[in-house]
View: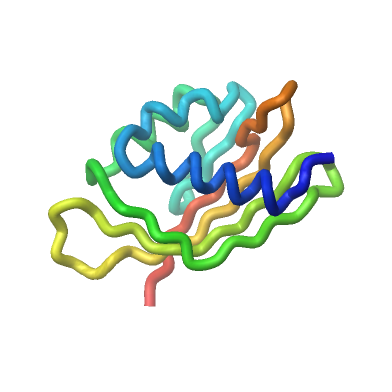
Length: 123
């Protein structure tokens, strides 16, 4: 099995690099069975997930990862939990703090996102 820390770290670097400027480029990470819960709203399938991610109310942004935890899942794959902040472009407001969880499954030599849960952290 792949090393969860290595895979998780590489995945986060790749994911947030694309998220910051070209969210449509994340399409290859999701499949039709993939699910995203974004602030309590559920989206299933790559098309629905990309529809949500590409219509967020901000364009380019800067993501800063504060913490990450990675572990093998007993059902297979890798769980990744991340906290951080998002600074939206052109905004003079404080960065938005967030938490996100990914469940990654290996398909061939690549990993795909089967589950993705995102929440802003208020307070």
